[in-house]
Image 1 (tube, rainbow, N blue to C red):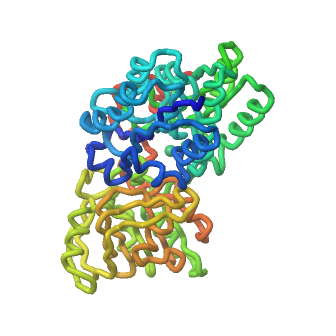
Image 2 (image 1 turned 60 degrees about the horizontal axis):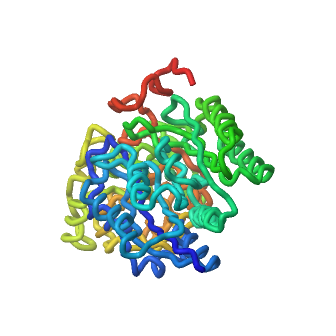
Length: 497
Ligand SMILES: [Zn+2]
């Protein structure tokens, strides 16, 4: 008989210091797909759900869809959004069950108005309905904050192994394959967890350099050598969350209960602790970054500057102005900057129309303590769009994204992309769909931490990283942590493991 499997996708990375909540419109602005449209919209994409669907086809599952919803990282998920989305996952048992298994795509760093460990709460509610026997598999982002509740309630945990994240579909297939073996009675998966007194580590999870490279090599060796080790996940954690379970972790999903699984997790976690000082980025001030850009030769390829501290992918506001101000002051020629999330400015530029000269206040409006005040700028509207585009880069190939109504505002030598929605720049199409060819620019400044590297490093003559003072600054000592257990590294310098 075909296995009947409950599935869903509910993801949010919550920056608890952000004053902007993730409400229902925030999910609709990024991804909100109803039950009957999930297969058509996500089946072909590089997403966990794409992997689940492919596996369900191959393994002959009867897949019961619930919801697929993602909001851009931001402040806490509201109770209304939680009720609407988690409610779809939780109310299906009566109508559509019983289920032989569950496979969910989660982030692992979601915080709601009610729960600091939202994934743990979702799994607890699901267990209340399904009981302890039905196997549950979850996929997580590499930046998951995994606590004991998640490890206890999910039998199978599979986290991404790439940052930039490009293996979502593959991880979806891996989780589905393990769930299938569990449903067939071949394995009895259980997951154990190791943590240390640390808020961040493993060079923020970078997999192009740094300690993760060696750790992931070991993970593959251990999995290959020990058939009882079903999946090991190295989670870098998400530090901008003032919750008890923030920070890196290692999970080991093993077949049955055996002390060696915990020992493997602890041994790998020791290495996470020992490498905590490794940071391969050099964080430049805006003035330093702009000085490098001014000296950079016009060699037919752009210098790419990441506005690291205002990465909307870490729940920042996307409207920090300090780097843009420095670029304007230096008079950089032939540059692009994006995207500034400022719905008011985008609307004003749309009202003015292409070719109009406009003076307006741009950016710095949500919380100017982080990243600089609004800039009063005079420039010309050179492009307008509805902001919708289809990604063609390695991360989200084929996925449609939307900046909302958008405009290109040319001020001196800089084409500034102004957007309505909050969105990290990780794909060349973010610029190209707005008439800016990033390959043809001398300098491209973009709001992203690490994900941009997948699409932008291949076209760049060099990449540099700036700390503009935005909410996502690597200097976490500025943030008022209250709930993380102290002492914790790096907030307390003398922390012991
Ligand atoms: Zn991530």
